[in-house]
Image (cartoon, rainbow, N blue to C red; front, side, top):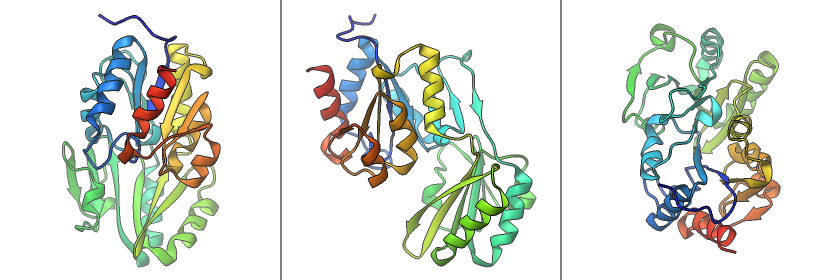
Length: 274
């Protein structure tokens, strides 16, 4: 039985890495306990992450959630506790992906993509392994043209860093309106994600706001990365972590501490107990 709401019902969307989680699977128990308290009071707590479902569900369970969960930055949205909730499952075209692989083959370090929990990787290496979130998934290795059975939810390319700008220009010029890209730097190589243009945490969050009929002014979003910008912009209460990407920090209307210093807990306590 839920306790009496201390405030009108709020929808609270939380990024995982760099926001709610302090490491791949580490978190602050005091923060989780406070989120469970808000959940028990009737507020809707939800996860919005770039991770696949299999490596984010442990947080969902630890918080006793019953809400939708945004995975792959919005490429897949489900509600594990409500089979009637409308599923979002956005893909990219397999043939486009295979054409891109051939184009970048001279400077390709590796590439992988997923179809829900099936992971398909070309040029597998120990350097790529940590990004695969293999636990709970089915790993397939080989040329994607030989092993990929259908359209994936997106793809991550590992490229020589001096070729990233060229790659992004190629995607922009050849796949306008069909594919978007963004990249992160990791030492001698960079990672470039290609994804469906409709994939955005913002779009998914707005749909969930509408589904629960909760007005923008009672929607809280907390994140730290470039992929959280739309999420933060769509909430009436957009919160940037202390370790946030500069562009996200600029659009947020609230700021808190970093993930290692209870940033989520500090903000939520200041908001709900004021």
